Image (tube, rainbow, N blue to C red):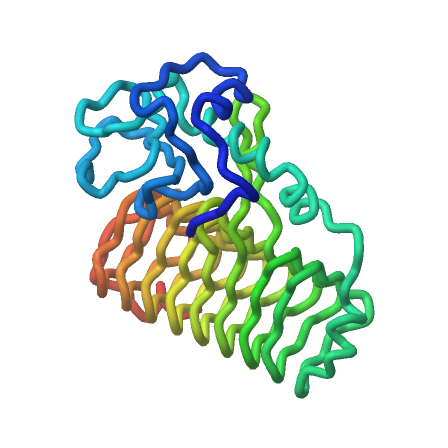
Length: 301
């Protein structure tokens, strides 16, 4: 995703606003008008890379924040902690937007009720932030909180006390990681009680079609859960995880950040997933390992 500024700013003025030691190499007159992850780099963007092993030199068009100078990149900011530098910049320029998204005070529930969305029920004590969208035939349970910008498809069920689209509590040296992305929930999704689904940082968190999520599940920022996946109760999925289509995640599992779980895979009860899982795999244990036996016992969820 690309997050645009209200007006362009020179790289010189931008660096002055951030109280971290840094050196800039490149065009001194360079202007930026948007922030994005590195894969969306464009001529007027600012991105960061923590890993010094950069393979996509030709694709990088904007300014990049790095730890070490890279001779293949035209415009770069060198600083000790690229992520922290980037976080401070985004927090500075999006201070009002983040305040509204992180700490909404006005309940727009009545506004959505007036729209009379076909067969959609919103419980009396639900809290709905600004710019939330709904499809038809939805049910929003008691004490559900939906943060601003969340998008919900058709035939979605959200049970009591669940929180959708909140921000994550990741801090770096006292600086909160900015979550300027949103949460998108596709059609026919069912989400149990007491769940938390965090919106994205520079991406959207996405829950695919016909996904089923049990009670007390925590899903982190930028997670992608693809179609027809089942996640059983009391599971924790850390930020940046991708769970591909038709997977079954049993009760009480934990998935490390940025792990990919291949399609049609099954993760057994209480498993701790610390590395990528190939498609059609069965994983069990701590740390999770591939197994073949005991299928009937492990996958009954």
